[in-house]
Amino acid sequence: MGTQIVLIHVDAMRREYVGAWILSELLKKNGYRVILTARHSTRRLIKKFNVSHYISTHVYQHSPEDWLVFKKRGIKLYVAEVEGIDFEDGWTDTYPTHVGASKIDYSLFDGFFVWSSASKKWLAKTHGISQTQIFITGSIRQSKYIRQQKEITNKVIGFISRFEVINTFDSRHVFENLMKLDPESPQDYWYFDRCFIDAEVFALYVKIIKRLVKLGYVVSIRPHPNESTNAYDLVKKMFGDKVQIDDSYGITEWLAKVSTVISTSSTAFTDAYLLKKRIVSLTKIQKHHFRDPSQKDLYSRFDRLAYVPSTIDDLVNFISCSDDNYLDNPLGEEHLKSYYSIDPDTDPADSMLKIISSVNGMSISNSTYYSIFLWVFFIDILALLKMSLSIRPVLKTKNFINYNYNRLLHRPTNFMLSLKKSLDGNARGVD
Image 1 (cartoon, rainbow, N blue to C red):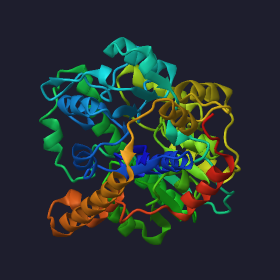
Image 2: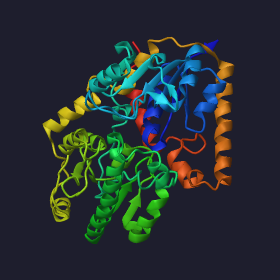
Image 3: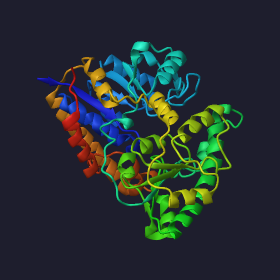
Image 4: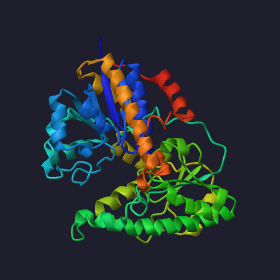
């Protein structure tokens, strides 16, 4: 007797793991077998075994030649968008035209799970993809199954870090990035902007944290999923136990521990706003910003969700004097609904389940499933051995654990298990 196997790739563990895990639990409730894999295991698995459905995070996860092979083998191929497009004439490196010298054939994919109608129109226009291949599901990171938590009683101030350009997760030297860029190409300006922005904002964070710590606050910093957490040992050394470096798998779990969020303008404001956290944006305090008008417009819309002080004194005064109520802004809510397709009557995880269930994938024998399970188990063991022997920074224990999903290291947390109880109680089966 056969079974349907869904392979879900987790690209950045602290960004995708919780959402992928929620989707996997929902698929299991509806009779599917699910395998979660990561950068060290996905390619090795799918080149050796067939699965019924494969959900990747990027079209450049494999070469165009490999995608063609997977398609010919009968695997149903999907891409779950990890960064949406906010306007129809935008540009993004999420959907390149080539991998190396080979052109990507977008017609090979059975479906794209995108955040919004803007993403759908952009994909159809830019890559000539059929409208029937593109599904507006919203971001799975905004699933109602993830946005559940108890009220907090502490007054921890949270800082969202996004310094992956100057603090690469694999300790890559900045020269390696710069040698790949064209300083005369407008498409690469964002990188140079980010270098200025990241350097200035990190210095601002340190200055603000000094002020808050003196007032008796405890600070929690959540590094970007693409950052090395080792670098934050320097911050811990400066502030001691007054500063915590978050190691939660998902941002929602971290938000359960803080009362206020401070950051540069960010899409992460969404998670904080939907959980009714106070948000403070540094937009007016910063001297450096993106020069691209579309970037400025996007972040100005996320700033609608936040208090935007003009000075550090204003910021500290707001933290000290205002209550814990978040700032309600109808314009901000309208932007979120548009950008993420947030709808109380539908859910990204439910939508993905329905779409996958509507396409009958190949039947895989149970014995093959157990072989796949053991194969991934073996690959995860090899990855741990390689980590223990390697001198490469990216494979050092702390970096590996924080970035790369591994079944032997990463088990559902108590927070995730509490989400599963809600999933068991509220999930709708496929009609």
